[in-house]
Amino acid sequence: MSQICIRVKDLVKTYKDLTALDRISFDVREGEILGILGPNGSGKTTTLKSILGIIEFDEGSIEVNGLSVKNRRKEILKDMGAILEGARNIYWHLSPRENLTYFAGIRGIPKKTIIRRIDYLLESLELSSVADKEIRQFSSGMKQKCALACAFIYDPSILLLDEPTLGLDVEISRTIRDWLLNVVEKEGKTILITSHNMDFIESICDRILIIRRGLIISHETVASLKEKFARKHFRIDLESEPHSHLLDKIATLGIVSVSGSSISVELETANQLIPLMRILGGADTKMLDFHTVENDLEEIFLEVIREEEE
Image 1: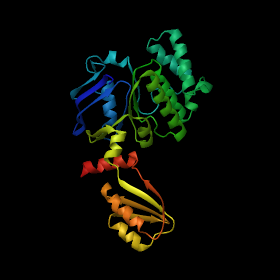
Image 2 (image 1 turned 60 degrees about the horizontal axis):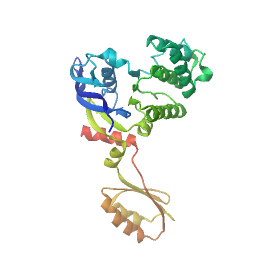
Image 3 (image 1 turned 45 degrees about the vertical axis):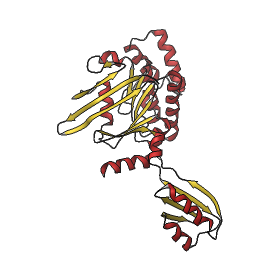
Image 4 (image 1 turned 90 degrees about the vertical axis):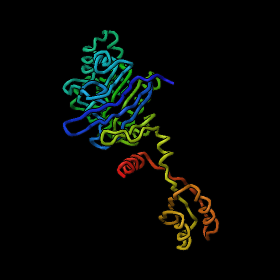
């Protein structure tokens, strides 16, 4: 098992009467992509900013590669990159190449290394054709790719991303996802991501934290979340539209809805599958297909939030 590179323990942050983080604790391992989900104001961005040392937390501790954020922040930041609040970490009146040269320069990267690194990032993020144009002319997606390149210019091992796909179209989001997965697989990077884009989070993250009102209410892999909150929901395709007496029998087992010759059934337990199949076996119409319908991550997220409210 890979080593722990970020350790957050009993973290507390308050703003006057508001408790933004209420003794949250979690670890992140090298080479892992961890997603942080939560409603607006839940504490996601506060968590990232605390790890970066941008805001000072009240209680608890954060260690990055064994070093305390409070005491060794300058050393820690040498190996961390971040994108916060969209693409605001870049200069829009400069070109991608000029931005990359500037951020590499303030990090003290040798000139020969800078040129190779810039060429690699421009090519891998499909920015070579616009490398010398002013960023202010770019779309939101192109600006975000430039911000990502600048966060990676000094080759940090840890990257913190706050809403990296906010407002982006599907194609750009997919490009960013594939690029991040590639650098994790080939270079062993560690990434923390906050996002409201559930499809993006589901397709990229190893584990997910769900935060609500400053508390971690769920901390699991995507697979375990899906298993835990899986509905016993099935779609049955019939040869012809079902008669009312068949629907009445199925309704004794669970919730039923009908669309033409297809029936959707939600059961309370998987044990009800056997009596369901017996009912369908005795029907006066042939069953053509039987599908299990999975919850997607958005439905699971909302269910976790609802359970916590209850």
